[in-house]
Length: 588
Image 1: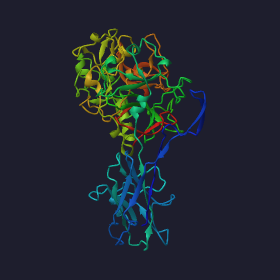
Image 2: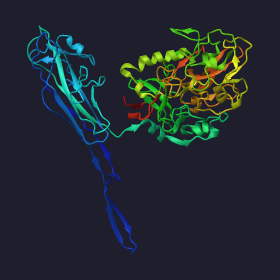
Image 3: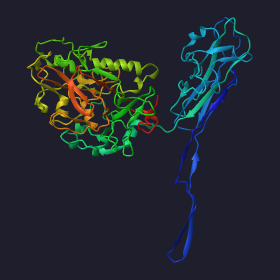
Image 4: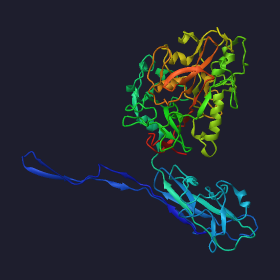
């Protein structure tokens, strides 16, 4: 089988002082005489180099026996060399000019050896008249499972043989093919062409750094109390000071936290647009074609985002009906194939909830009902309906071929704050003690309770925060090192406080604030924060309504589901500028 080597060379321009045309300058010197001077621009083009060399020009299988088992070819070595410090990738395809993935008989092109499927393995070579390839990146000690190469020009299936981040990394692989012939296969030579592509990497750009570059400075303490109207003038990217706004729910404060605030298109005030000249980009597209909007960075250098639909019609600017995965209740009775607590249960506000039975009217302590403040990671064992719904979606869309779990912060904190106050008493020292008993299942005429996010977002008694007042018991993560460890996947929802930091205002309590946040999608969607247990025995949570205001309703209401995820520190941008029509695309 003949094959050719192909390499791609990338280059960048470095200009020192600009490249200028010659100019003549005329002036008068100190002596009064005329003098003349000219200048010329200085610059050059620098081309990082990369090349591919092959140890042999043929891959030949000797002794292929009709009706026998699969036979290997000779092994060739593919060497890559480059002078760039940022590494390179080596990929491979088969065929030329979109011809065929098969090996074709040189006399009768209707006779072929068919390529096995991508990643199908050596077992596929038990089928007569098939072929595939394998490679080794450790000088032949171990070999990858047999697979089929993608066709030349196929951008959907990419076969990566080497992916380095450093030019000093090993630049060699061993490559071979295998085939199995049936007893009735026609004799003769069967050939095709294998192409190798080595591509240099450019200087890495990190998503965290892209957000940081947009920062307009630190948001001062008096801006975060919701008694101050959130206006368009506050739009931008701001620093967050954990010391000013409360302890961060993130696992580390090694990095400054930056967050997007306010409307991103001041010209049209449209929640669906991608922003114009005065906009702040925050769109990200993943390889599974899902779109997200950056809300903030994290204390560990990650980037937290909210779902914003799928990339279609060359844009991520989705709005009404398209910026959510679907609708669902937060937690009530049964919905579809999911089960959960009825909205009369006080512990139904939990993203997970305790085993206190439904319809329990015996007075129960808060620590038993909601889990004890602090490091309690065991009390809340049951998943809410919305948690089950989000995790089902994640398994279908963010794992397998499109697996992003390794790219997400597993220890990121998502706070389902279940701090409880008597209605009207929201001082720091007026929250209910852990030993306080309440009736889990509600009826009319009950005491009126408010949860912590109400005091911060629908009253004016406390500042909003990224903290989690009750500690690990309410802090959701996939590990118990940093949170309660009750997430199957690193995905939940935004909190009401994060929505407020983003510029979404309140509409309850008699005062209306800004609804011009970029979070507004034209649909009501759930947030993670509990809000109330009212005197009718109804339990409610926060959501952002279709007009962009923070409001509440009982947990059995069916509203939009817009999950939130947090990309790990060091996530690189490979393309895009962050606007909806050119979203930041991150590395696979």
